[in-house]
Structures are given as structure tokens and as C-alpha cells.
Image: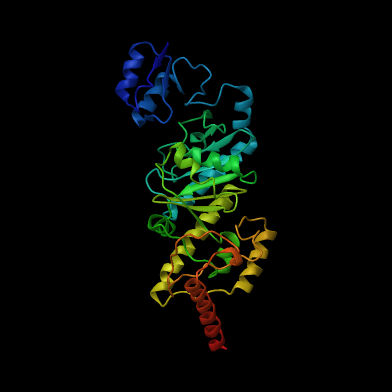
Length: 350
């Protein structure tokens, strides 16, 4: 007998006991529903199967076991998938140990096939992740396999995979220094630290929408083709890469950069790399195949300079050619003065 529990957002031991008394061999829960630990243990002890979806949707993937579709099951349990699951769990621990996630925050995914994505489950500490807890979804967000319901924020990951063919892995987390920029509506200036320029560079800031919604997922679409890291307003960051580990590296580089700028401001503020030297770094970045909105702009102002000296947070600016930027006389004069000040400061050091 199948018992429909899709009307419940939280399934407790009492709910499972009631279902068992009715002779349940299977229970159906809604996507994103929470199974309490005691409820999960009771299901396992009684041998009751769990699947997500609706009571009449026999095609829904089981939420408590591998998928019944032989092809999906084979892919989900393949040697490649097992290696990816181990890597996701290792990265989850790194995120937690660096204080980039707390509670059940953050999520990680990897595109395993043309339409299949392995991802972390909902409501699970990234430190405690184990391979058997991971899920697999398709590019619409439908869960195909997995030990627990998938993260509600997978929709953002899927938009990135659909927009960027090179993206194989996505990491979303809440590192405190980068998130400080995201909640202030500011981005860090560029052309200060070479490693940051090469691996991240000009970071984007997406508008705020409620996390987990389709609207939230779509906020990153305008940015992910030309950026591998995006600040999510009032939320955190998201990074994509060719591997799960590399996506996590970008999160580290971004947060450490923001942290370093905050420290530098306490002792006088940063100095800047000149545009010609920045062009050298951008050439290295292009050879590595890393995205940057400045690649296609031959006359783009490569360095985002703050309007006020020693400022480490600026309003996001589009990358446009200096000739067509439409700068006012005062803005152009300020820009010239900033460049002149940097040149004179460099000469004074010689």
C-alpha cells in the first residue's frame, strides 16, 4: 500500500507510525519535505520505501534509494559518479572548515551527463556529507535518484549549466568576507593582486530574489558566460568551474581577496597594478580559458579604480570601451587624476 504524505512539509516519527498502522509499504513525500532522523530510522527499520512526487506519479524517482530506471541507476552508481560523490563530500568539508557554510547552508553540484547532475541534498551540513546522501536531478530539477531530497537551490546551478557549456561543477556558499560585499551592494576593485586577476578578476553582482525560487535562479543568467564567480545580493556567492575542486578554489580566491582588502584598508589602503600590467595578466587568463568580460574589449579600461582613494568597495560597473563610455568632463578629469596620482606614486618609489 502507498500512503500519500505530500501534504506535509515535515514528516515525523508519528506520521510514519500512522502510515505503518495502515499497512504502508511505500510513502510519497513532496519535493523538499523534511524527514526527521527518527522518521528516517523508522522507515528503514520497517522496510518502507520513500519516493518524492505525488501519489499517482509512478515515474517519480525514489527518494530513499537509487533510481529504478536501469540507465539512471547505472550512471548514478558508475565509477565516475562514485569519484564525483567523494570529491563533493571532500569539498563540502573544506567549505565548512573555512567557515564558508554554516548549519545546512551552501550546495554543490556536478554535471555528470548531458541531462544529469549530481547534487547535495537539502538540510544537510556540508561537513557531514556522505556519498550515499547525494542526489541526481535532470536539467529541469526533477530528482532522478538519491538518498535524500535534492537541494532547493539546484535551480540556480541548472541555469548555469544551461548557459555555459564549459561549466561542469557549481559551488554556492556564504563566505563571510565576500558575502559582506554582496550584502553591501558593492564589488571589490580590480588590479590589486595578480592571482585574483587571473582566476576571478571583475566579479559580478546579481540582484536579490528569494533563494530557491526560479526567479532567484535566473538572476545569474546575465553574468555567468563572462564570469566564473558572482556575488549574490544579500545572500552569498556562486562559482563554477571544470571540476568541483576548481569551483571551490574560486570561492577561496574570492573570499581571501575580499578579506585582504579589508585588512589593507586598515593600514592605508591598496595600491593598484597599472593597466598595461593588467593586460599581461588578462592575457594569461585568456590562455587558461577562464572567462572575463574584458577579453572582448580591446580598449576597455582594465582596472576598476575607486572614485575615492583607499576605497575597497565600488558600485558594479559594466565593462565598456573608454571611447564610448560617455564620461562627463568631471568624470574624465577624475579618471585622469587617478591615473596621474598612481604614476607619480610609482615614480616616487624609484
